[in-house]
Length: 176
Image (tube, rainbow, N blue to C red; front, top):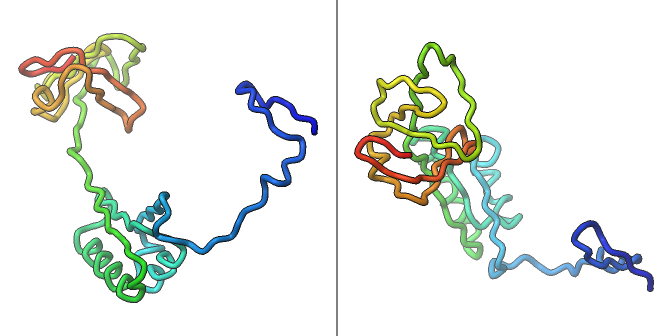
C-alpha cells in the first residue's frame, strides 16, 4: 500500500482513499455535540418553514437585532414557539443577537483628506472629544465611555473588524 505526504503539513494519506468516503448513516440526535444555529430571515421565519428547519436539525434560532424591527422579531419568536409545539420532541433555543453600541469615528482635518493610512505597529490615539479633527495618528470617537470600558491589553476592532488595535494606555479622555 503506497502512501504519500500531503502538502506542507506532511500528513500521510493512503493512495486509495475510497474507504474515507464511507459514511455511516445514523438518525439525527439532539444529543450530538455539534449544534446547528439558523439565522432567521425572510426565507426562514414564517411558520410553514420553521418545522422544516427543526426537522433538518436546527437547534438554535438566531434573531439578528441589527436588522428588522421589534414587531417583526416578536412575530418570529411567536412562530418559533408555535413550531416547537408541533415538534415537542425537538427542543429549539432562541438566541437574540443584539447589536452593541454604534461607535462613530470623527472627521479628519481638511489638509488630511477623507482617508488615512495606518501602518502595522504604529501608535494610534482615540479621543472622546468628537469635535476633534483627526489625522493618521489620532481620531475622535463618539463613544464617551471608551477610556473606562477598555484596559491595556484589550483589542479594539474598527472598520467592520478589518483594523485591530491593542490598547496600551487609557487616559481620562483618550485611549492609546
